Image 1 (cartoon, rainbow, N blue to C red):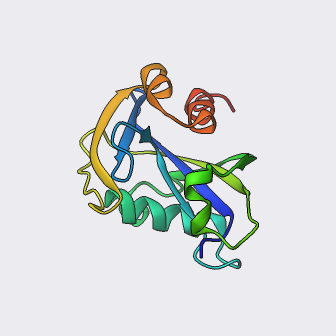
Image 2: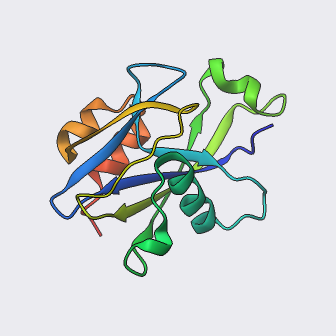
Length: 146
Protein backbone atom coordinates (compact mmCIF):
# COMPACT_ATOMS: atom_id res chain seq x y z
CA UNK A 1 0.00 0.00 0.00
CA UNK A 2 1.16 3.50 -0.82
CA UNK A 3 1.98 6.04 1.88
CA UNK A 4 -0.16 9.19 1.40
CA UNK A 5 2.89 11.46 1.45
CA UNK A 6 4.48 12.20 -1.91
CA UNK A 7 6.93 14.35 -3.80
CA UNK A 8 6.50 16.26 -7.04
CA UNK A 9 9.71 17.07 -8.93
CA UNK A 10 9.58 19.67 -11.71
CA UNK A 11 12.51 19.15 -14.08
CA UNK A 12 13.55 22.19 -16.09
CA UNK A 13 16.45 23.69 -18.04
CA UNK A 14 18.14 27.08 -17.81
CA UNK A 15 16.08 28.14 -20.84
CA UNK A 16 12.92 27.38 -18.81
CA UNK A 17 11.85 24.27 -20.69
CA UNK A 18 10.03 21.75 -18.54
CA UNK A 19 10.09 17.98 -18.92
CA UNK A 20 6.68 16.32 -19.02
CA UNK A 21 6.03 12.58 -18.80
CA UNK A 22 3.00 10.80 -20.27
CA UNK A 23 1.43 8.34 -17.84
CA UNK A 24 1.36 4.72 -18.99
CA UNK A 25 -1.88 4.03 -17.09
CA UNK A 26 -3.58 7.11 -18.59
CA UNK A 27 -2.29 7.98 -22.08
CA UNK A 28 -2.69 11.69 -22.69
CA UNK A 29 -2.14 12.58 -19.01
CA UNK A 30 1.06 14.63 -18.78
CA UNK A 31 2.88 15.30 -15.54
CA UNK A 32 6.17 15.91 -13.79
CA UNK A 33 7.92 13.25 -11.73
CA UNK A 34 5.80 12.17 -8.77
CA UNK A 35 5.93 9.42 -6.22
CA UNK A 36 5.14 8.38 -2.70
CA UNK A 37 7.60 7.86 0.10
CA UNK A 38 8.87 4.27 0.33
CA UNK A 39 8.91 4.52 4.13
CA UNK A 40 7.38 7.08 6.51
CA UNK A 41 10.90 7.95 7.69
CA UNK A 42 12.36 8.46 4.19
CA UNK A 43 13.63 12.06 3.95
CA UNK A 44 11.64 14.03 1.37
CA UNK A 45 14.76 15.12 -0.56
CA UNK A 46 15.87 11.48 -0.81
CA UNK A 47 12.43 10.44 -2.05
CA UNK A 48 12.60 13.21 -4.67
CA UNK A 49 16.06 12.08 -5.84
CA UNK A 50 14.96 8.43 -5.92
CA UNK A 51 11.80 9.16 -7.91
CA UNK A 52 13.74 11.41 -10.29
CA UNK A 53 16.16 8.58 -11.02
CA UNK A 54 13.51 5.84 -11.21
CA UNK A 55 11.28 7.74 -13.63
CA UNK A 56 13.83 9.55 -15.84
CA UNK A 57 17.28 8.06 -15.21
CA UNK A 58 18.51 11.48 -14.03
CA UNK A 59 20.92 10.95 -11.13
CA UNK A 60 21.34 13.99 -8.87
CA UNK A 61 24.85 12.80 -8.01
CA UNK A 62 25.79 13.56 -11.64
CA UNK A 63 24.39 17.11 -11.53
CA UNK A 64 25.81 20.29 -10.03
CA UNK A 65 25.73 20.18 -6.21
CA UNK A 66 22.37 21.23 -4.74
CA UNK A 67 20.61 21.08 -8.12
CA UNK A 68 17.61 19.38 -6.54
CA UNK A 69 15.94 21.85 -4.20
CA UNK A 70 12.77 22.05 -2.20
CA UNK A 71 10.28 24.63 -3.39
CA UNK A 72 9.28 24.99 0.28
CA UNK A 73 5.70 24.25 -0.57
CA UNK A 74 3.34 21.37 0.14
CA UNK A 75 -0.33 20.83 -0.60
CA UNK A 76 -2.99 18.40 0.48
CA UNK A 77 -5.19 17.05 -2.28
CA UNK A 78 -7.95 14.51 -2.69
CA UNK A 79 -6.75 11.27 -4.28
CA UNK A 80 -8.68 10.52 -7.47
CA UNK A 81 -11.19 7.74 -6.68
CA UNK A 82 -9.72 5.51 -9.41
CA UNK A 83 -6.35 5.48 -7.58
CA UNK A 84 -7.55 5.09 -3.97
CA UNK A 85 -7.20 1.30 -4.10
CA UNK A 86 -3.42 1.84 -3.96
CA UNK A 87 -3.69 3.31 -0.45
CA UNK A 88 -4.80 1.86 2.90
CA UNK A 89 -8.58 1.68 3.35
CA UNK A 90 -10.15 5.03 4.21
CA UNK A 91 -7.26 7.14 2.90
CA UNK A 92 -8.68 9.80 0.57
CA UNK A 93 -6.04 12.55 0.64
CA UNK A 94 -2.33 12.89 0.01
CA UNK A 95 0.26 15.47 1.14
CA UNK A 96 2.49 16.44 -1.80
CA UNK A 97 5.85 18.22 -1.31
CA UNK A 98 7.26 20.19 -4.24
CA UNK A 99 10.84 20.08 -5.54
CA UNK A 100 12.58 21.40 -8.63
CA UNK A 101 15.76 20.43 -10.42
CA UNK A 102 17.58 22.32 -13.15
CA UNK A 103 19.28 19.98 -15.63
CA UNK A 104 21.42 20.52 -18.73
CA UNK A 105 19.31 20.82 -21.88
CA UNK A 106 20.94 17.74 -23.39
CA UNK A 107 20.18 15.45 -20.43
CA UNK A 108 19.34 11.94 -21.65
CA UNK A 109 15.97 10.69 -20.42
CA UNK A 110 15.37 6.99 -19.71
CA UNK A 111 11.71 6.39 -18.92
CA UNK A 112 10.39 3.71 -16.58
CA UNK A 113 8.24 1.85 -19.15
CA UNK A 114 5.70 0.64 -16.59
CA UNK A 115 5.09 4.25 -15.53
CA UNK A 116 5.49 6.41 -18.63
CA UNK A 117 4.94 6.11 -22.38
CA UNK A 118 6.80 9.17 -23.63
CA UNK A 119 8.27 12.51 -22.67
CA UNK A 120 8.48 15.99 -24.08
CA UNK A 121 10.22 19.26 -23.30
CA UNK A 122 7.98 22.32 -23.44
CA UNK A 123 8.24 26.00 -22.44
CA UNK A 124 7.04 26.37 -18.85
CA UNK A 125 3.76 28.13 -19.72
CA UNK A 126 2.75 25.42 -22.20
CA UNK A 127 3.95 22.63 -19.90
CA UNK A 128 1.72 23.99 -17.15
CA UNK A 129 -1.27 24.01 -19.52
CA UNK A 130 -0.63 20.41 -20.57
CA UNK A 131 -0.56 18.97 -17.03
CA UNK A 132 -3.71 17.18 -15.93
CA UNK A 133 -2.99 17.90 -12.27
CA UNK A 134 -3.83 21.39 -10.94
CA UNK A 135 -1.05 21.16 -8.35
CA UNK A 136 1.48 20.20 -11.02
CA UNK A 137 0.38 23.22 -13.10
CA UNK A 138 0.82 25.50 -10.11
CA UNK A 139 4.27 24.09 -9.28
CA UNK A 140 5.47 24.72 -12.84
CA UNK A 141 4.14 28.27 -12.78
CA UNK A 142 5.99 28.88 -9.49
CA UNK A 143 9.34 27.66 -10.85
CA UNK A 144 10.96 31.06 -11.01
CA UNK A 145 9.42 32.62 -7.93
CA UNK A 146 11.53 32.52 -4.82
